[in-house]
Image (cartoon, rainbow, N blue to C red; front, side, top):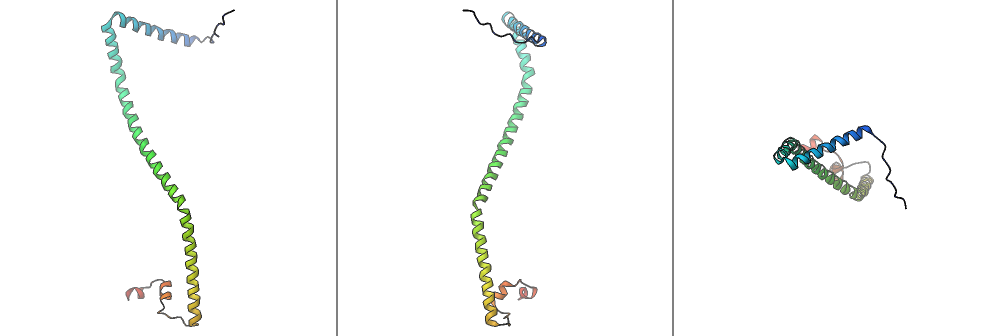
Length: 142
């Protein structure tokens, strides 16, 4: 039984150079850490000194963005709830519209009955007539 050899990736000279350099740095750091502990601690200290301030700044920025995002999510949830309530209020608006139509119809019936009883003379002291008219300056002064 023959062993299957793994397929070879295409040769990329730039990638090979970068990988070799990275591996050399890693092996150098491991060698220094193993043989010269004080230099290893110094390099760790330098790395932390260089990497920590940008990391802290990014963390603060991410925290601020997180709080803004939470506020935006709250606003969206509140607006969504308002839209749902408005959607549920549609039946009530239809009911109100029917009641308004009914009220207008009854008002027209009352006007018709009033004009039929009184003929062509319209009483100025009628309660229905005074309700249906808009207030004037004379009626507001009384």
